[in-house]
Image 1 (cartoon, rainbow, N blue to C red):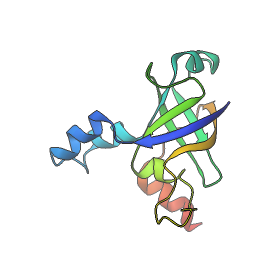
Image 2 (cartoon, rainbow, N blue to C red; image 1 turned 60 degrees about the vertical axis):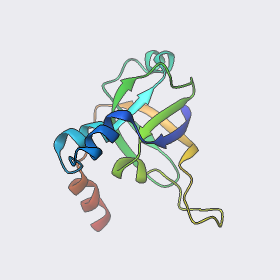
Image 3 (cartoon, rainbow, N blue to C red; image 1 turned 30 degrees about the horizontal axis):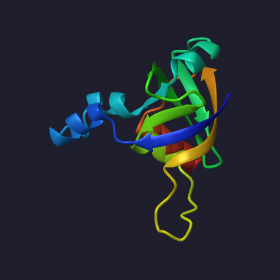
Length: 124
C-alpha cells in the first residue's frame, strides 16, 4: 500500500524523554511503532507488524491503529527507526524532510530489529 509517511513527536515519547528515560526499553517501545488509519489497518489484514520502505531505507515496526491518522498516511514517532526512512535531500535548508514522504507499507511477520541489529546491517 502506498502511503505518505509523517514523523514527529508523540505524547508518550515526550513524557518519557522529560522523565529522563530516553535509554529505557519503554522509550524504545514508544518509537518503534507505526500508527495507521483504522480503515487502512483493516485493508492490510490487521497486522501486528508492518514494514515501511522509502527511498532511504526500510524498517519493521509494531503496527498500531490511530483514528487521527488520515487514510493513506502513517505516523512514526521521531527517533532511530523514523530516521532510517527520512530522505537525505534537505532542499538546501539543512534539514531532511520529515513529513509527506512517499512510502510503501506492507504487513510482515519479521521482527522489529533493535538499534544494534540495524547498525550491524550497515556494517555488512
